[in-house]
Image (cartoon, rainbow, N blue to C red):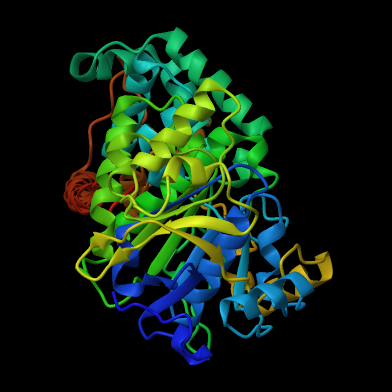
Amino acid sequence: MAKANTAAPVEAAERDGCVLLGKSQKYEYLVLKLANRHGLVTGATGTGKTVTLQTLAEGLSNEGVSVFAADIKGDLSGIGCMGEGKDVFVKRSAELGVPYVAKQFPVVFWDVFGQQGHPIRTTISEMGPLLLARLLELNETQEGVLNILFNYADQHQLLLLDLKDLRALLAEFGSNKELQQEVQSTFGNISSASIGAIQRQLLVLENQGANKFFGEPALDINDFLRTAPDGRGIINILAADKLMSSPKLYATFLLWMLSELFQVLPEVGDPEKPKLVFFFDEAHLLFNDAPKSLLDAVQQVVRLIRSKGVGIYFVTQNPLDVPDNVLGQLGNRVQHALRAFTPRDQKAVQAAATTFRQNPAFNTSEVITQLGVGEALISMLEPGGVPEMVQRSFIKPPSGRVGPVSQQERAAFMASSGLGGKYDTTIDRESAYEVLQQRHAAPVEANSGGLGGLLGGLLGGGSPAPAGARGGRAPQTMTEKIITSASRAVASSVGRQIGSALVRGVLGSLFKR
């Protein structure tokens, strides 16, 4: 990487294909071509992590890169409003040799609960059994039962879209002994205790408001990849203050998003700049109490998703929050101050210091405890993918407003996003709940022939044929035999097409065609 001369004119701070992050003895950059190699931003509360995140998001947006970030405290939402030119920012910019320019950035607000942004939804099927089991805090046996339910739903074309669909399927298995025996020969026993445990955990999930997360219209992940008319990348901000009261839901939701990105986006290799940079704030929630199967899946996604043009940046207080097999894949590092008050704090300081390429000019572990607000240790990847020597740096102040937006400003952003008509109204189409309700409804006129009978056979909701003298089915007429044969042929074809589309990915989502 070329060295910036601190005595050079202001223009020297700008570099093509780079995001200016701060300044040590030289200017510190995030190289866009290496931004999909992932990164880590760590530091104690109040040391400036959110400001660093905003500076990175603004720089990426200026370069036409879309951004997704969770707004835990509401402070990041102001990035869509004009900067206020606070004295401390103007002074710091002058010290860095970079003029302060107030700007506002293109933003879209999202909210799982649909209150402070456009609703984000997914379906039960897209979430998949692995992530749903983690969200429900199921044990290994209960997770196995959930996998059987998903398999059964796939084989019988029962759409699992929202929580009532899953509830209906659980009730069907819990009350239908013949169904339990049917699957037992293939998959093993399904106990009433396991069914009951899953139902109770679903109730807990509903009480946390998760029923608003499951349903349709489901999120089109491509809506996170848009650019503004002036070419800048859209900054997608998730209102996460309420979501954080359900940390399992928060972590599982972001994992699902990673899975969707991994499944939907095509391979692009190493592009000149990423399509999307994903900031995962409060990253420790992702890894706390996670089973090994999930950790292995996360590691695989982090390793492979960079070839889809996506960079993942974990934001957390302590570098020990991230498992070693994931930490080793995070090449771009920003370390704010840590406090060494307890033995665990001291261990964290040492762990953070040893992950850097050491600078002989100072003792890294000592400096980590001495950093001021807005100051950080920075080590970015240089061209060639080699980490630079760690530098003690001042972070460039953001150009947008630092702090929350008002409700009126937020409403104006939502009205102008162009996405309200797509997501703001819930759709409830026929799915497993309705199909199972029809099966248990009192039979109407039997043998409804013609097209109605054909569709009834395809949907699995047709009425049973009338019973004969001994309780068996009445003999079919020739016309009924032809219709039945056609129904089976079409159903078989539809089943093969649906089955080929339901290819579950490493985190359990569906491969969308």
